[in-house]
Length: 292
Ligand SMILES: [Zn+2]
Image (tube, rainbow, N blue to C red):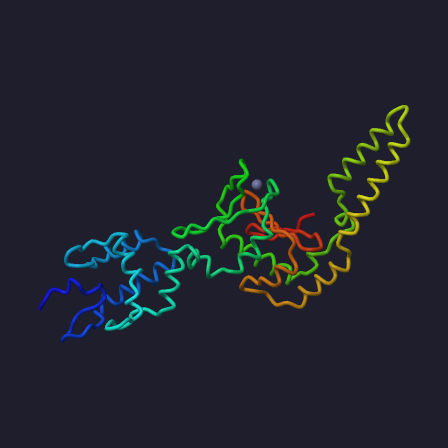
């Protein structure tokens, strides 16, 4: 029999017909699946070599080019004389990942992460947390500010498990979301500055009445502005009712999160603080803690 050197990996000639070579066909599927899962060309080549799969008589060893050649080849969807080994969906998925249009399965499987990402902030500096997703490795969350280096690397799993744990704690005891009156008013930095300025002026022997009055007015209007933003007690009550009517979750619930949570703060120790829309904050690191 003639050597099958021109026949692509995965196929064989039998009585003049092209057929799927059973063992190789399975490996073609594995190559596509591994790539979709986030493995690189090189990693797949290593898997193939470690499994003692021969690429061809001429080149028995796999490398990134041979893997790429398989992933590029449209015949595996079933074209012309070639029977299909993979689906066209798989081929298109691989194509998108190669073109960088899709970051790969790890992120694809977690589209709801965006809702968390938008609200995740560094506890140390207040900057937005970033999520780095390396196709070949697992993802990591980090703050790009110098000196905010995390003691542990927050992963999707860490963040999501904290969110689920806190959510369930609140479902079990909605009263965790109760806020005291003292919690409901925190003057912001501008107000504190103005108040200090007023006191400073008033301490002077001959203070300028007109000037102080202006500062006082400006301070009062800032306070008023802030008061309008403060969540009233009703919000807390409604929030507690919402959670009261829920059953514990085993999966992240993006709608619940978007509706009830204002911020998620990640401490560099890995402790996660979840701030609800009424201002109540619950933190989690192995155990649930209400923050005062
Ligand atoms: Zn930071």
